[in-house]
Length: 387
Image (cartoon, rainbow, N blue to C red; front, side):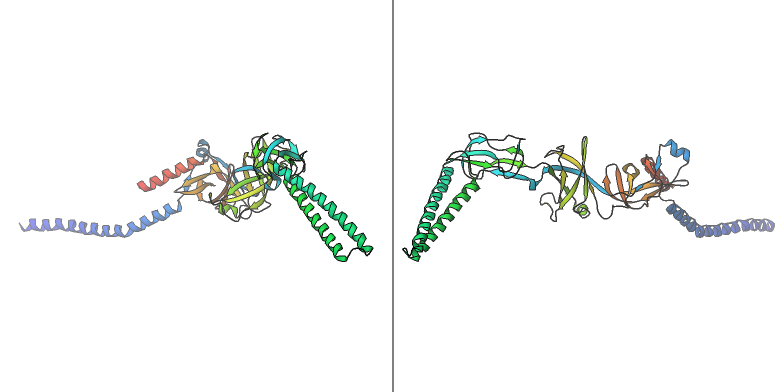
């Protein structure tokens, strides 16, 4: 009986030692586990944005590799509208009310400065011309009286006060005649008869609008024609305030339309935002001596930018840019695959995008099918989350 009790005690001793050993092992495991977890976190952070691909895998995915382009001027592409140059366009109005009895030019025809565009028949014209004739007659009479008084005064027959009165009357008559001539000239003059007056072109150019018809009654200041010199046109566009700060008078604008291309020069950048659009109006001049551009035509304008985005601009194809977690990235070639490089983008110029920060221009980047790298990057992040 005593022998059985001793044997049981010996059997229980190794079991207790084993439990103690297991407890100590568990404590050691708790000390090393956090260190292993931290090592994995640092390794995962180091590999963030990294994609491992072989040359064969890159070729199979159809990924093309190229380098960014550098140099040249940064540009901003936008829609624009061709308009007539405000300084080269004239509105021809009726100076007096009356009836249109002649129109000498149709749309598209040219006119020289001072040539007659229209003839208006009016009682006011008759009064103005009558006043010119009457004032001319009064001036002739006053000059005659002045000559007579000068002779009489020289012969000591007439007193000096009569000479002074005659000289004053002649001066007043001359002023009245000049006023009558000025009023008639302001209205147009000519016309062919006493009750008609001609409306003359204030500048040479081409008729681009006609607002009246033959026989129509018009009021004073009514628009009759618009005449424009279309050898120089105006290009109108609107910029965001941030972009307008990089556009200066004199910057070039490449104007493009189907089958045509020309260069315009910025003349004016408004210091005030448009009230309706909250954009900055910009006006440029476009040479149109060959007549290939038309007023009201929509075109595409590539505006040269000053400052950043200029001579050291780094540009990449828009197909090279992908968005990861809401931020733009470009995939840069590495010895074992690609690295997603965060970048700061600038303006878009056609199929190219200016990169303001993130690239120096010497990298090799994925230019075609870069979206497959974005998908591969998403798979890698999902695998890390599963573990």
